[in-house]
Amino acid sequence: MYVTWFTWFQPYVGDIWRTVGFMVCSMFLFYSFIKAWKSDPGVIHSTPEQRYRTIIELAE
Image 1 (cartoon, rainbow, N blue to C red):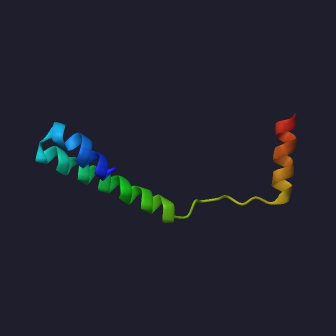
Image 2 (cartoon, rainbow, N blue to C red; image 1 turned 180 degrees about the vertical axis):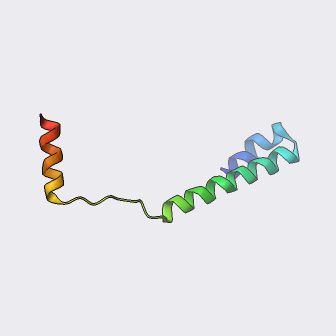
């Protein structure tokens, strides 16, 4: 992503503040990605009885 920015977009944008803004925003995106990747997915476990009841309710 950074290689694309510096080789293709930076010569046309040319403004250092836009480049800094891009870098800061991408760092926040990477931070959010890593935090979501390492966190607990929050899977809700159900008993077999609840599963069967749900299947029956959906089939009706």
